[in-house]
Image (cartoon, rainbow, N blue to C red; front, side, top):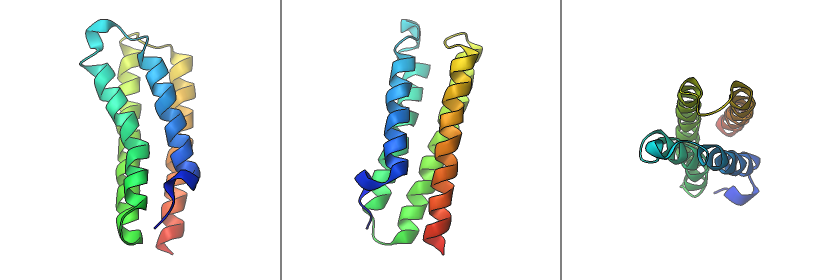
Length: 117
């Protein structure tokens, strides 16, 4: 078992989730139950799956949840690209956000590789 609170990827995922909520707070009210909700749920899923996997029995289960977390990163990236295309956030903000998300994905893949050894 791993202590998720000590994992850098969990800490980074928490920061991404906070940033996501700050961004979506500015979206139109008409998106509250649509894209805003989807984006927020995807962002929460990232650190949640890291935490859940860390408490599972064995590294194989942990790796499985880390893969789910990466899938949520891709989902979040897609949704943010859509939000930008709808004019809900600026391109430079999107680029910065995606850069941080991509770093988290790489860090998570690195951890997966280390666990599998």
